[in-house]
Length: 217
Picture 1 (cartoon, rainbow, N blue to C red):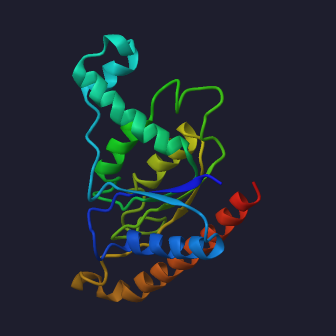
Picture 2 (cartoon, helix red, strand yellow; picture 1 turned 90 degrees about the horizontal axis):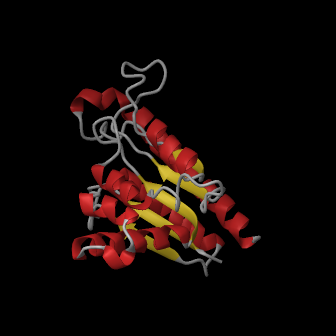
């Protein structure tokens, strides 16, 4: 069985709700499939560089004609793409920062989204593979909230991961994570606790479902 690729993008090494919910997923995953391998890349601790001119132009140059800088940039892309394509399932932790995704996760996407290889092909190599995204956020942005429509993370990830890469994406969304630390949000703490508990439960259920699916292959 191929491995689970776990990509963290929270800048917080401790106290991160997205990382905590991901741990629930991983614990359940290991219980359901003890022999299952997990490949972990922590973009918070070791971010990949933003896509550069060398990284872009290297995609269109014959390998023998690449400059040293282009060759280095392409080597990184190859490493990340091979890691992506080798996985059978994906776990992404992508907290909302300022209404969108962390720049570290966008940098990773820019490195692995290569037209003609991982995207833009008739038969997408990752099409149909299951993915869970833990998309935590400090506030709440659903219908009826004061900031409804300000969520530019989940819609973007739906397009990028689901539409362009073809993954079967499920979202786990713990909300109001700042309530515990922000006195102005004190009255929202019960709702925040309920959202977090629900997120942990959903993460475990997704892990069970995906592990069972991959074990059947």
